Length: 305
Image (cartoon, rainbow, N blue to C red; front, side):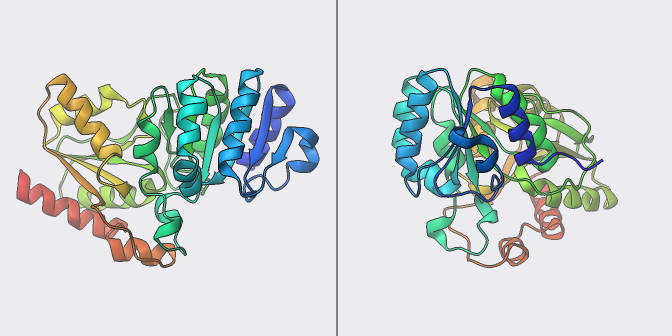
């Protein structure tokens, strides 16, 4: 049986719950078939992300559950003040779905690269941040997020799964895909595909490697982070985001709050945008292919252990 797509899942939820309203700022790629199905419950505001967030806040005040869609970079930056003020301060719920985040904005230059989006969104009190690794993660999470009281930023990715998932999605929980006490790789979003390749290569070289699909940066799975830092010789956070403010920062903050010392390192974009190119070229250029990640992680292991 063909798994449900994000669009199919959202349509089914709309049929079950008449509170749900689907909105977009002229970004229909993932929801192209919904206007004819939802009628007035589908709203396209045009290229007006701030207006869309303001409208979503008004709808939320009236008991609706808005799903808002736009490119990640414009949702989280152009409309940041509106998300912070209209939704965050007011404690209102919306599902904020950001398209082509991080390296997935592969054919565009720095103006279209959302590589500080997690930092911005997790800085808003009460805001969940969800980074699905594939279509399975995404589709499983949507019904759960609809039922929570919190707003959530979804770093949208619906690519086919390349791993066998071992645990269903739970809000605020990471998924442990492999066990090991030498190296822990904390992976984010679509990069799980590449880190799974790296984990296999490292295992073949004799390194007992734990692979974690972090799923949520906020709320962070403190237990998984704590256990990795205490039991593994090296913990590496891999993310297509700036080093500051993303997964690595969240992990370091959590460990510092608990007074836990661990050998934690980052593989991320360190104060630089990535050169435009197609996704395979970007991954290769920036050192994020499975093969290059394995080498980078092994080098960190040799240098720090």
